Length: 160
Image 1 (cartoon, rainbow, N blue to C red):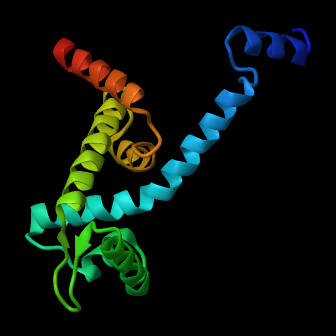
Image 2 (image 1 turned 90 degrees about the vertical axis):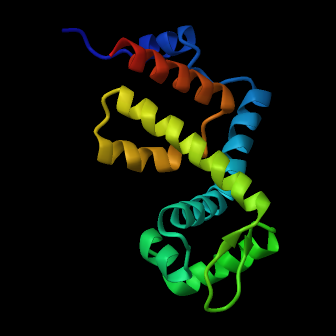
């Protein structure tokens, strides 16, 4: 068996397009990730509020704290932020309600989540792992990739 030659690995990387991309593309990559990080927590809260309303008839701050594994103080800060962004209506000691903008965001976020979740399951990822992975991936996947994931999942379903 021959020794590892990093030059061969570098050559293969260049052939596969894994070398450093052009500067402009690299900037876009990191910018996209930064933007996704800024919105993912907001989307997670709005999506969960929508899910709680759909499945339980109401969303309360205590339910959010419990399901997200955070303190009530953390949830209160986020609710204030969601109010300021026009995504949620709330009053002290009352249920939370999504505005139309909040409902739209929750629906979009849920749809993205479902596409990623179904894709991971179609690949054979166990359900528990697929649910965990989908929670983070949904925010970082482009619409183009989501469309391809959805097509793949639909083909897999048609073949089964």
